[in-house]
Length: 450
Image 1 (cartoon, rainbow, N blue to C red):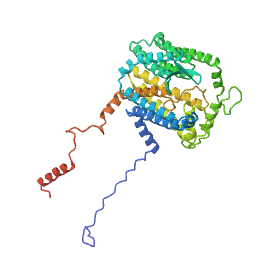
Image 2 (spheres, rainbow, N blue to C red):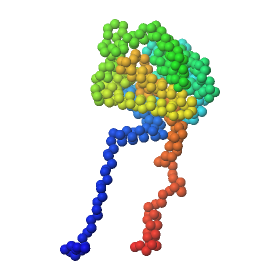
Image 3 (cartoon, rainbow, N blue to C red):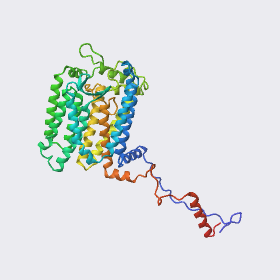
Image 4 (cartoon, helix red, strand yellow):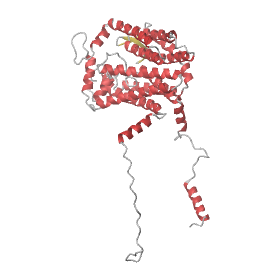
């Protein structure tokens, strides 16, 4: 073997084999899509979407109520934070109702269906008693509780119809009676029409539309045939046309669809047009929180029915799209809860609540955008109004309870380690660091290591 100049044998270099081709780089957009899909498929996704989405909508609504109601309160010789404090109190009570509803078992929700329906019917009938009902903006749907506090019983009628209708359809499905059209319609449709009649006695057609949407949502989930569904829809549409044609106020609202300038005459479309002005002046990121111009007496009901317009003016397109995304996430989570359960009551109740919140949000936002007639319904969890906030937060608690009842979600919640409030058991305590190092040193000395 030839030697090198140093006398050492030459170093034998290893023969390199063929270089393996590198795996192709993964598309970052595809990887992001895969991660997002895995996140959506987790058992607790619906639970966190309902809890987080409703909390964000409520908190953002409190901020916008404070911003949009200051001028109105000052014009009424009230403190600037008057409406905000009342809404904050309603949100605190609603949070308690949400927590109670989220911890209640399903059988207790079913047991409350008939008492809530009876209480709602009693209060809605009490509104029509002379001296008890209070008229607000031409609609007599309020009961005075003393001082400045009032309650609108028709808002609780939505919750009553959801719970009672879900319990009724679930019991009939257990007995396999929903295959007959008479069992599907009776007594659900007559009871819904009774609630609608009590609401329309006060002239509140906006709430009646929401109640009708809940009824159709329950019938759709129950698997109503197309002919039956179309027949009930035709009857409801005919009644709606008659109610609109016989009311000059409703005809005036219908005539304001697509209006871009105030008109002269009996129909001026002032509110609809200034809602469009508020949205148009917001731009991409808005004029800034509290810097709205339309709320200075130009836009009626700026903190109730048209709070979305003030949001668009102050927070811009980014703020309005954020609100729409939160409602879309809440609707998706409700549909997911209704679609993944095997309990018929949970399916009907979750579908009814989702229909209620989604339909009311669409009607309110559509009216602000000029796409639908102004129906006078608040934006759920967002607009000012304790009578609308309390039953809606209880309904959100229902969705949270149903999301927790999913077997996969229940298992995932049980596997979570408690971080606060609970101490570890004696057997699960981790050894202290100094004790571990002493054992390692003793083992090293016994093996002869230094």
